[in-house]
Image (cartoon, rainbow, N blue to C red; front, top):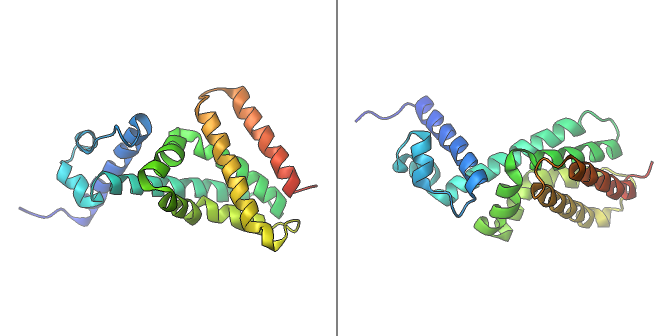
Length: 193
């Protein structure tokens, strides 16, 4: 039997990843099945295992992709600003919007810590948005060097909790406005004008 070309294999992997993202967002990690994902992607169960080494490997790939997409949105918004304080504010607000878009909060903040374990989840976060947040806090002249890590972790936790709060209130414009206003209050302490 002829082997698939690299382009066909890459397209299969991409399609499986997109379907898996939809299923994990809609059904959650525990309820999503490899058989259903394979069927919806138009591939065999074996193809999913070939590309992603099973359900957990597929979930890790989805989480890594989401983390990278969110980090890219955060950086893009932050780079529109010129000073460190404005960059932190813009990036933080972009994070809150990005993580609550497309039901990413369920995948990254609810299922990922449970499915991957706390340590692995923290590694994924630290490699993407966590790294960007730490660099933004470090760039502030108002933050002593020995507090950078602690402040970055606390700000990350506050934004993750706000994202979970918003995820429980889909489409609630008042809740979204309140979450952004509360985030501004937190950021004022780090970035006084």
